Each structure stands twice: as C-alpha cells, then as structure tokens.
Image (cartoon, rainbow, N blue to C red; front, side):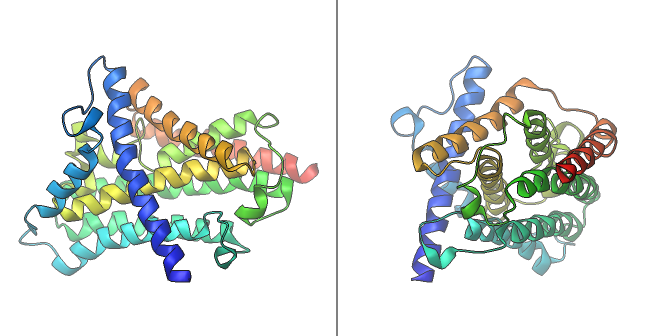
Length: 296
C-alpha cells in the first residue's frame, strides 16, 4: 500500500508540474500581450508533454573536464529531494501521517542547497561555479528568515504536523505582513524572478545549470517547479488553514499564480539589495514577530 500511494503521489506531482509550466507560459504570454503555446493539441494543452519528450530524447552530452559521475548525480539528487518533500503532503492515507512533518520540511529544504552547489562545482566551469556560489549564499540566507517566519504560525496553533494544522484557524488576517514576508522569502528560496540570481541569463548565462542539457536539465527543471508548487502548499497550510479539499486546492492555485505574476511584473533586483533585504529587513522582522508571539 505504501509504494502504491507514493507512486500515485509522484505521478500527480509530475502531471501538475507539466501543466503548471503551460499555465506559466500562458500567463506570461498574456502579460506581454502575446499568445502562449497554442499549436500542439487543443489550446496547446499537449505542449508540456512535447517539451518533455524533446528534452529526454536529446543526446546526453557531458563536459569533457567535468566530474561525470557527480555531474549526473546532482540533478538526480535535486529531483529526488523535491519528490521526497511530497511525502509529508497532507493525505487521506493514514500511512503517510508524520508527526513532525515541519521538521522534515526544514531539513530537506536545507539539503537542497547542496544540489545547486554540486551541480555548479562538478561542471568545472567558471560561469556555473559562480552561479552556484551566488545561489548557495542566497538560499542559505533566506533559510534563516524562512525559519523565523514559519515558526510564528506554528507556535500559534502549537502543532508541527501539517495534516493537523489544516484543522486550525487562519492567521492571514492577523499577520498579513508576515504572509507577505513569507511569500517573498519563498520567491528567493526557489530562485524565482525577481530573485532568480542563480539563473540570471543576462549576467550568468543561465548560472549553475549552464552546462546541463537534455534529460539532466529536465530533472533540474522539474525539481524547481515541484518545489514551487510545494511552497504554495505550505503557504496554504500554515497561513490559510482549511480542511475543505476544494478550497485548499484553490488556495494552492492562487499562490502558484502569484509566483507567475511576480515574474511578469517585477524586474530583477540587484544581488546586494537582495541580501540586505534578508539580513536587515526580513530577519529582524521575523525575530520581532517571534518575540511577540512568545509574549502572547
């Protein structure tokens, strides 16, 4: 029963990622006053599957001076961690009931930085290594502020289990600024625009994944979008508690859409301003909110 539910969850996540990429291209297309994918299938609905087939059928080319084994392990590791996060997804199956799911989330999200660093280092490319260092510093910095922000709603309901947290009460209207800080932190944590310095094409030629192509690039791509959807799920659970399945899914879709609007609306920030935003704004704000929560 365990492997059946796990395989079913993985398949659902991959299908969600596929159609989320189509949704992103449609949203960005209309923001830029143009059409998105519309040729493959009805309304371009088969475009994600065509892209997946194209990527995975491409020839696997490894850089000559790269560490070839670790070069292939890095995207596989990132993809595996992104799927492993979905083990703690609130489910009707009691076999997936995990008491300390929040702690598991924090541990796995902290390990993700090693995948980025490993991908840039094993490529043996200056551009890839520079992008990996920038991404690692950015991810580690925002891990700290994300912890302080997330622990406030956890203390309010006194629960670390995601499934039980959905039975609690909403704190969005009590701490709407905290929700905005959390959303901005997740943008930086998942390397999304306007904080996509790890993959800033204008400066780094796609950053740490510049040497990847074909199936290995697809694994990195799938891991990034799976993390985005999971972060939207975390936002819906800890800030908009609701045990109604339909409303819960709508909340996830809304948060996922905000990621796309942020990419289409805002230009990329400077790297030093991003780090200053974390250490001089978000971190003191998170500590103050945590202190007020403890006093309460």
